Every structure is written in structure tokens, then in C-alpha cells.
Length: 305
Image (tube, rainbow, N blue to C red; front, side, top):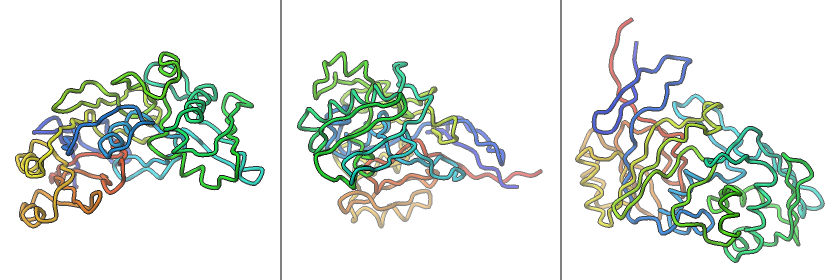
């Protein structure tokens, strides 16, 4: 029979996949991007690098997720449902229970209200969620959003990485100002920001992520993000097997990349291409911020039995 093994970066640990029993996370996903993030605050995330990192730590309410290994159907995220009423000027958002922030705070209606107040009272929030005039919480698992005009697009708006939910403890410590403390990473997401410097950053698996109980991943233990402004340098790191994913490659670089049987490519942002090792599965880099919780690494071996 065929055996699929998870492979770590640079020949790291592997683990066999048993049919019907998803494997535990293993390995390091190496990722090189063109520029370092300017902020880790989701509301201030404007560049692709900002959104890539913030999107792994902070989760927006209405983003739907699929798990790794190709076996999990799409499931709702932090919000189980979002229902309009009163001509789309009032929306009721029902929250998932049992979710905690990385700092231990509970995700409940009070936590969402703290974020909604930040969105309503800052220029950054008003740009992403225009017309929000109030929010309240009839129950601990239910939030109502009130708008000054019909807003039929709330579900898609609340899926934006820029509206990733931040722990109310962090918001209280910053007095609900627009900018979070540099490097704060108190979201509900599948990864935590472990360290960062001018050369790169390291995301580590959040062991208490609610999605793991729903078979949503993550499929890797670590995400090692490097910064390289030159596309030739990014391609070189990919060819050396130092990393598995290189964003922002030019079309002229792709014919040479495709001559390597271990590499492939897919559409990137703004007309660029993303190069990747064939061991990478379920990476959708055409999105602004692909959810890396669904990505996993494989090597294929032939076994018997």
C-alpha cells in the first residue's frame, strides 16, 4: 500500500499517516516573502506581508476553514452564523463556544464588543466596516451589529484579516487605541508569534487552538518566515531546499524553476508566481492571506502490508 509521510524542513521528522486517523502536526514550513511585516496588528495590516502573518494569529469572525490532509469539509470559524434582520441594518452573529485567546481570555460576546468598539471609533476600523453605529450582546454567545444603512455585505466584511479578533486584555492594556503594542500576538488563531527580527520570524503551533478539535489542523508545527527583497534570492533559497515556498517570483523565473522535477509553481499576487516544493499540500497562495493551518508536507514512499 502507499504510505504518506509528513516531512520536516531539511530532512526533519516524519510520521506515517494511518487511513481514518489524521496524523499529528509535524515539520517546519519554510516560507520566504519579499518584505518584513510593518505591523502585527490585524486592523493596521495593509501589505501582503502584514496580512499573511496577522492572518495566522488573529481570526476574523466569518472566515470558513478547511483542514489539512484533504479530509475535512469547510466549517464555520469563530461565528457559527450571521443572520440579517431589519432590512440588513441589524445583524445577529452567533459565536462558537469553547474558544480561548492565546492569553487565556474567553472568546465571548464581551470580547467581540471590545473589538467592535475599536472598529467603530477608529479611522482604520471605519474604513473596513463603514456605517457601524453600535453593537450589543443580548446573550454571551450572541452579538448584534447596528448600521446606519443597509449592509448586505457584512459576512464578507467580517471575513477580512483586518478584522481579526484581538484579546480584550490586549485592548484594555492599550486603552482601545488603534495601534496594539509592537509584537502583540494574542489572537485565537492556529499559530502564535514566537520571535521576530530583521531577517525573519517564527510562528509556532497554538496547542490550544479550537480548530484542532475539529480536525482543522495545523498540519505543521512551525512556520519559518524569511525576508528577502530580491526575487533571485528567494528563488535561490527554494532551489537550495532551505525553504519550501517562495512568494513573488517573476514570470521570467518560472521556466527555469519548472525544469526542476521537485519544484512547481502557482499563481501569486499582482501577476507574480509562487514557487513551491512538490511536498507542499493545500497552499492557496493566490489568496491575500492563505490560512497556513491547512498546509501540510509530504514525501511519498512505497510500503508493503
